[in-house]
Length: 168
Image 1 (cartoon, rainbow, N blue to C red):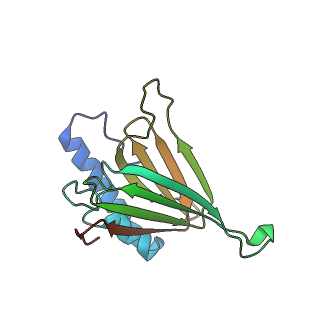
Image 2: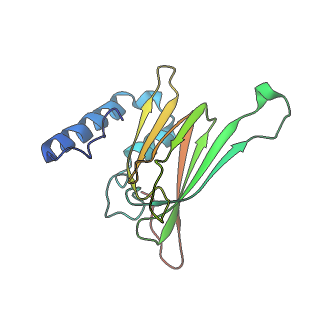
């Protein structure tokens, strides 16, 4: 991660400085981001662990890689990824759709424990590549690291049961 890889840092001032630098980066590049991706990256709930749509401490439920089948011509096919997470408060699901995926790396460290999972979502950040694609980098508790490069990111909060929570 370029800005928010701060979990080995015991200095709260440095953590705040990293978040401030990331916020400045997003603001400086606002016009280069697709609207939905920028709104997702800068949402007031994104890093607020008290908000039910916050990604911190969510769990992976499913990850689906989808290649479009609208045509059989290889050059016209498109890859998308749909990620579904169980919210940290177990009262909703979060769906993140990555559109027009250019590449991805999904890593999970091997475990000798009885429970093999990614563990909790710790932190993420969204940046631009030199060619103006998006990179969404995610760190999980059990040494899982994901990077997904795409053209746009869409987010959806889906409340479970009678409880409701606005995504904004």
